[in-house]
Image (cartoon, rainbow over all chains, first blue to last red; front, side, top):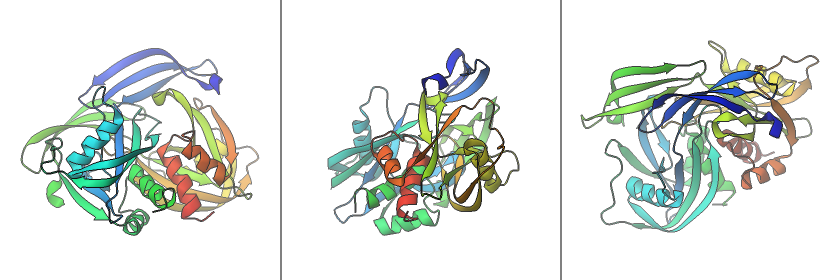
Length: 181
Length: 181
């Protein structure tokens, strides 16, 4: 597989934004030909599955400008510079749900759109939740609604397309079948 | 939830590429404040789970410049302008595996990175495969390796992180638990 590597010949920075940046690389292909690669750089993110003592999953509904609709997702957020992803997960749990956790476990990491972006999501599950009295607020431009759903309800929401987010759909099947909840 | 909508005040096109484009929108938030949204536009894609008569999944290994590594994925590809996603799936199946199908079924659609991109993936499962004598070739800058894995092997590859791609990880859990294979 080593031979399939695409060597970078030149990198052209197009845009440096607040969250993402865009560059176009000239690459040398395995057969010696050249090609262009449009690449979005993203700091990486975490997502977590908060499970209540009643066995429900806490999800959040928020408007996503990119797709021009509100969707249901597990809590998630970008990793701040030099932040340990586990601390990102704990921070996002507090900001998006108002809960803390005594039991957080790393599950997996994934590339979400490897064809054009380097975003990696690190997935956690959080149990043994406790209400935080005066929780930290999230980004000031974030408006979210919290919902608690049973695994069965969540599975139905995946089947009907009401859950329309890849990480959330994976997380629900994972909780149901790998964690056997 | 209607009130959470973010109204577009202005759209600033930053880059129009071959595959993606980038724009920065000024939006009005539900509380009347303004914010900027960095948005990647993508034509959308399909992914499909090809299942052989022996019950194995055909996956492809390919180098992904965005994450600078080769990863294992189910066959996938971009929707061409005005192309029916089902035809995209059949085309990608031929190009990436050399197979045709007599039995292709739509499963679900997802947003892959709704925080910054509008990419939607439409997921299909293809069974009753047949070898195509002289299959169409894929993009000339695409170098891929085909593998056939059992569902059990694929599940292990998800658990170990060898399958590092969100759509593929979801697809494998889906095949195992929703299609009961």
